[in-house]
Amino acid sequence: MNSVTLITGGARSGKSRYALALAQQYPAPRAFIATAEPLDDDMRRRIERHRQERAGDFVTLESPLDPAERLAAFPTDTRVAVLDCLTVWLGNLLHHDPNVDGLRPQISRFLEMLDAPPCDLIVVTNEVGAGIVPHNDLARRFRDEAGTLNQQVAARADRLILMVSGYPLMVKEEVPR
Image (cartoon, rainbow, N blue to C red; front, side, top):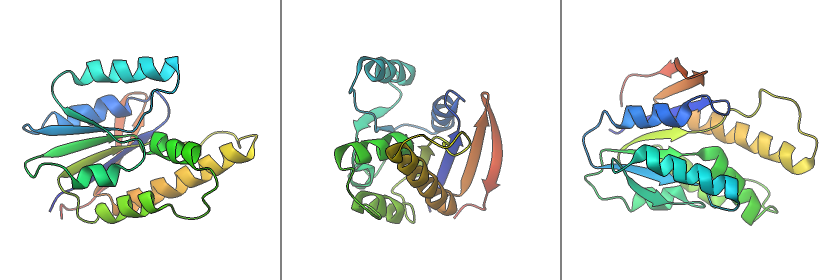
């Protein structure tokens, strides 16, 4: 059975770099599911930098709104996929449809897919609940929904790794399925 690894941590903690290093231990083919949308110049630069970091080692698939759908369509020989990142994906969902109250269908599909992923899956997310309480309603809602999503994914993950200043700390490691 395929495994799920969740990598979390603060901004610029080395999450993406570590996820790629883990995935590069697998033989090809490897996939990268990008959730970011190039909505401004800063995000365009970040996306380009991440593309260069991956070079030709990964097949990159863009999926800003429904990564479970993208994962379901993977070729059967894909060994590992990196999904980067849950909190960017959640931000996209809130941006495109801020009025949804309750669990979104895309999140439900993703959580269900984690019970039997099509390949080993390495998921990157941000730990957003360790800072100050956000000033506005949307930011508080994002923080709360991100915390809930992270908990739901961590409960299903075989491994949970917390990145601190570029160093991984193993938080959870279960016997492979």
